[in-house]
Length: 419
Image (tube, rainbow, N blue to C red):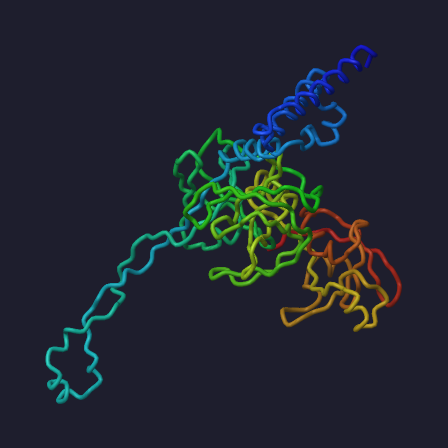
């Protein structure tokens, strides 16, 4: 920058200060001062090129946060970008029609006594006559992941194999939906509608999330308010929660994202977004009895399912074939183990430690072995064995480091498809 330009900036600043000093007190409200400073910023910085390209690169192309309006604009743009690909899913079933049928409350009495109670047909009670009608019994959300109509949602949204499912797109169109695949391990499923050239959502990278990062949830809140938007932050990472519901029992979900962006019943299966409008998670559960605590499955854990469906038409999940207990410092102390991490291979009431004819049995893994690493990745509470294996492909050969009788050994196992 040359000397003449420096002088120009100094003169502009001095002029601005002078104008601010002499302006009438009635005009010196917070709004007036904010507008003045904003105009001054634009008059000085804009001609000089605005925010540097270096700063933009450091934030992935998004300008650093300045006034509130920039933040709001980013949220609005993210919602506009993704809303066309967010869908509502309704669940319908044939349910019995209860009719009012006459009955006698005295039918258990001997016939000679019933005559003293007059007309017994004046009493009615609900009864099942065998008639049924199709009724909406639930709802959820999802988002389109391919232009030919593939939709990602939660498994618990489409868990009922006797139900029928209908998808409503953001523009009000209605489609019959078919469940293509349900993940046997994770709360994920893929459904398809008969449509082409559909809008899709860009998938982000959930491994790069940071606490405090903005999170935007979109979904069919309460099964009534489609494409409801709520905004919050990433409140926690790698959480383990136990979720439950009337139709699918209880399930322990590991490694989920915690957010205070409002997630309501009906939001399940909808996207959790970053400010770039990229999916970072799939909304899946809320903490009962709490405010502002919701959970989402990281999108990176769904990418393998998506690719599996696109290539094979089903979700193929890799299978090792061991039952285990995750080792913690407390368990290590109780069991007098020499390590405080890993997976202790041990059977339970559900079955033996090593499943027969499984990849684990073929690899020579035994009960009471401690699995320390898989392909060099340490098995910890943050990276449990099940999660590591689930990210592998069927048919892939993995190297497993084991602690047996105080000695480390290495075996290889070829993963098979979970049935």
